[in-house]
Length: 239
Image 1 (cartoon, rainbow, N blue to C red):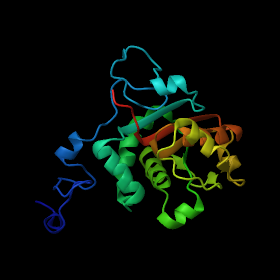
Image 2: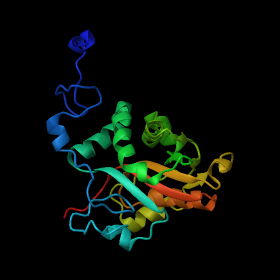
Image 3: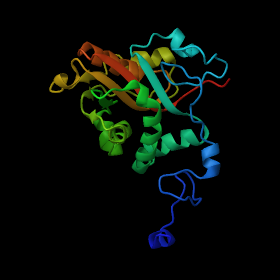
Image 4: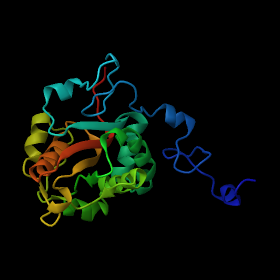
């Protein structure tokens, strides 16, 4: 027998008004328009490698070959395009905190090879002025839900963004890295949470990797045993 509440409050797609069978789900059309990153992928960022030989291991995309990544391994759940881009923008700018829960499920699926029972989950920090305006940090929301999915410890304030940086949209790769230089530091009272431990760094989207690199270098300088990264989405060049 159908739950009476379903008759009054039916479930809707996460990105459109179409009805779905369950909460926090995509309808068939939106699912087909969301590019989940599966198959042969880059071991540093999770980008799809459609022309790679999947018999090889630890493959890298062109970006990760050209740019030295300070983290050891990385994954992303979806491509930043189409419905995937819409999901990220709704979470980031549209007050759609409810999207963090289903997004974390997708991220957990790709992040499992990167963690062990001692892993600490840490989000990319938001500058206080941006947090004050937005009222939440989308990366922290994802990290919290991901920690629940993976049943791992997490600490939302290990990292501090003490330097207010401009939007990175439209900046070149080199400008992105220069802008993030010195912008992120370790919370002085959280060093003990990082030392000797594997850390999984969480962000909403990876473009150049500048933000993730800046945060990773702080964690490594704080004696983290290993740092891996996971993002909801990955910006990829058209093939």
